[in-house]
Amino acid sequence: MKMIRAIIRPEKENTVVDALDKAGFSSMTKMHIFGRGRQKGIQVGPIVYDELPKVQLMLVVNDKDAEDVVSIIENTARTGNIGDGKIFISEVLEAYTVRTGEKGL
Image 1: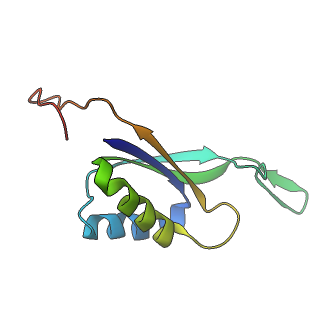
Image 2: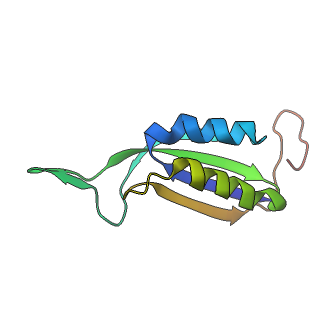
């Protein structure tokens, strides 16, 4: 299993979530967060905004589905501008359903 964490622009949240849902990846966690990238925020006139609003999506998928999920996120979240986001993928060793104690996805 893979955990995919995608940090995207807030205005792309619905587009990305709808595309993932349409492709059958509807189980996810969404968090509204603040962050900054390599550019350390943006400057508008004399004001520096060093923490920008972002949305983090977190999904756990089967190994074979990870590339498809990443592709969907990249294609629907991309604007071509600085600050489009990042995607992180990590291994998930085990997962359990709290209600049933069932192991796995």
